[in-house]
Length: 97
Image 1 (cartoon, rainbow, N blue to C red):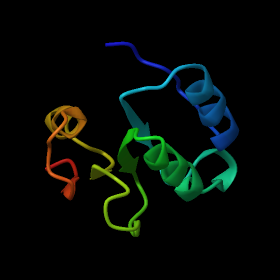
Image 2 (cartoon, rainbow, N blue to C red):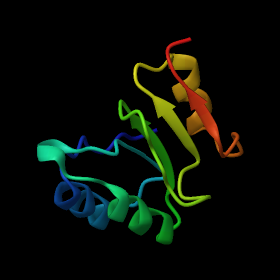
Image 3 (cartoon, rainbow, N blue to C red):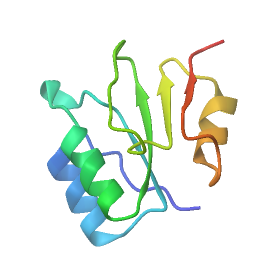
């Protein structure tokens, strides 16, 4: 497994993805400077890249099917690893418990 990133902005993430296509992307909703990642998530999904959202935001609303999982920070290692596996539940939401 190869890890690309981190990317703190949409521009950095798009540059990284243009160079190499990952199997999965872990994306926070709120990026550096308050930038919102909804458009990035849409573009990643359109490219067929599995998206796992890891966020501290209390309210996350994404169109159905745009994220393979939505994990609340802090998350457990088990929740993160489970969400990265293809075929894991599409509506996984987990915090520290």
